[in-house]
Image (cartoon, rainbow, N blue to C red; front, side):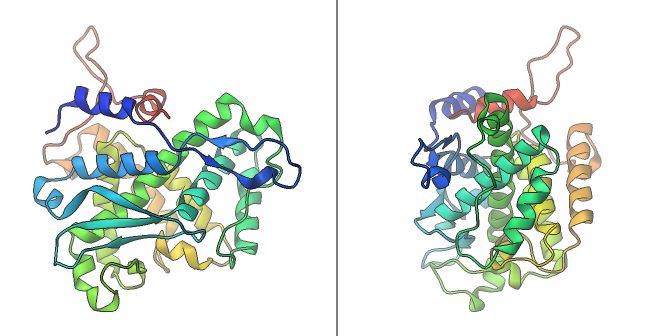
Length: 300
């Protein structure tokens, strides 16, 4: 069990490599900066590995995220030349951009109801593109206030966490090895095309628990899956996030239930866990980390 004070200190010392959005290229006005990007994704990936059972950690590179300079959204497990060793996750810069935009649209939706659905429709319409479109009207200054961007960062952290955790689970649950014949070594492949439904369900449970162990709740994950569910047809990049045929409404219900079980002490998660909690109150009780405090842990 890693020391929580050391973990928090490490998190606070770790910055976030900001990604510039090209939304203002036409007007030549200054580009806004997203607070989260490549470095924060790498840090969350490392934290996910650090909270896993030691027997799973041995399979994974401690620096588990391998960033690829690629505009297309890609996230996939990869491994080295030796079975079960040096496993990593390939994550493209385009995938980071995509999650930043989806998280931003979800945050703006709290200010302007209906905005998220509008962006999802736009994403589906232009979904054949290798680089998904930006949310509309991003030059509106209301969309870049501190309050909106705090929500954006929170949603991004939760979205990148669940997607990383799902792909990690395919490695330590041996799904990758099972379907290795269909995937070239050292190169990302769409493993969701091969996993069976019961294997996917196991990955969802493990990934949700893994994220919750890092104090990252399920709201952002549910928003990401809901984005895909709202599309009349799914662009190819959605296959890196969720398999075809999955009932996303039921998936999101399951995520919410896992979160309630986690904090409620349900036997569903009966094994001893490392849970980040607030300092004990005067009556000796404690509570899960509040959203604002989690945001501080992963502050740029």
